[in-house]
Image (cartoon, rainbow, N blue to C red; front, side, top):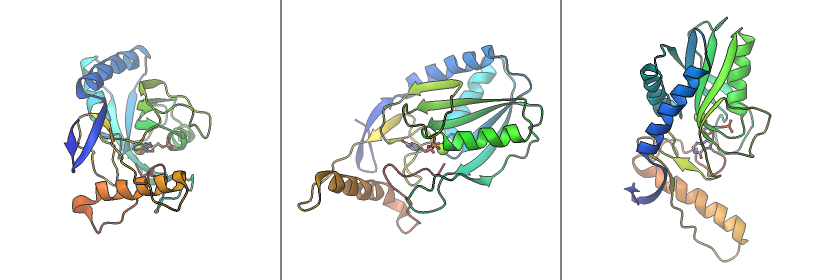
Length: 224
Ligand code: IMP
Ligand code: MG
């Protein structure tokens, strides 16, 4: 088990597995026949996946343009507002274009629904979605990804661009930080577990970032 920041990480998808899947996804994307393709990477979580996917697209024989948008589902804190905000917009006019939105994870679908609606409102001809991971059964609204790397268990994952408080993004694999919740006497087991996990993840991520605005929660973090 790899150790990072003094924590053991359980690997869910290793670098080779991801690389192989990226090649397959690029072939799927090519076969979908997008025209005048604009790839939009949703920052920050998708930056590693997008970087690998666009190079796989090149190898597959596609020549997309590539853009970035930064979205956040949470302003501050760890409580879900369910509201997505636009942090940084694309610079490209998407009118009449085929757009491929690239994100790390499809969970509630709020982030991607927001991006998709925005592009459609701006007159994109076709808006498709590619995600590395999909956590099934968690959609807050109907949304279907056109290209899915892996159907992922309902765990908080890190690596390959995904983070806890901006830590662990550098990992070449997708994994789970092994958690060792400490049960405390009085609170109910569920409550104490959730609390200890929350604090534990915060500490695991803290390291050199101590003093920065901590916005970490186990289930609640959505900052891209
Ligand atoms: P949603 O589909 O709008 O709920 O949000 C998906 C976003 O939440 C992803 O783009 C990630 O930034 C973040 N997210 C969801 N689950 C995880 C996780 O397990 N690890 C890291 N980020 C996550
Ligand atoms: Mg994200």
